[in-house]
Length: 235
Image 1: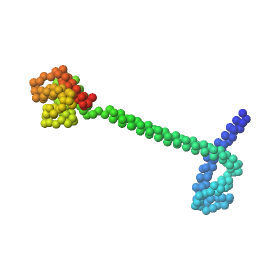
Image 2 (image 1 turned 180 degrees about the vertical axis):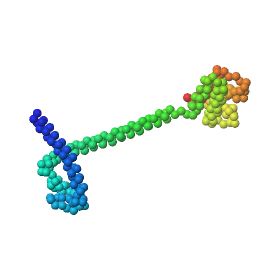
Image 3 (image 1 turned 30 degrees about the horizontal axis):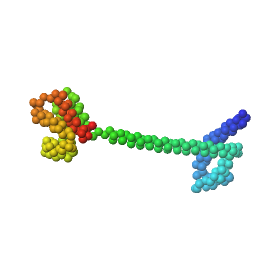
Image 4 (image 1 turned 180 degrees about the horizontal axis):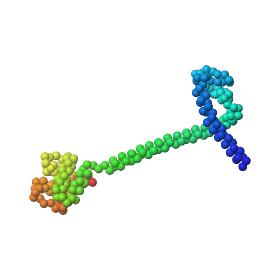
């Protein structure tokens, strides 16, 4: 217990000395050095001219000894080790904090980079081709109650069929010419394409005379879909 009290007393005295150093010695030293440029610098009772070069440690030690009462100077010398230890501890603490901040910053940047790459990969994986978007719109028009939308859906599907034939390399002045050039061995659903295209021609050339019903429309769209799926043209 006695040892604990002694240690506590020593720590209290050390902090007291630290307070004297911070709040008395440092301001006094700064004030003295700031006025020394005009009045000179006193060392061992003698005043030199204005400071024109760096002040050495022995000069500062002598200066402090001259301007301080002996008890305070002796206290400062006695507690210098404590001041140095506290300064070293604070420096190491700040260094550790700096290293931690830098490490965390790098981790955050690495995490953000990974999230960005994952998001880019997700967008790429879910990137929907234009033909798929067009087909989804056609399917939406077919499910409406508007007969005009049904006609537009079939006409648009036939345009997509023409684009598919172009992609496969079949050439011709008309859609019929392109389908006649098809090799059945390479186009298993060509008969379905012909049936769907004939329905399209009826709608295009006999608009006012052809009455559509939902069953015929869905059947025609299903024909186009089976043709497109053979070549992975739509999902």
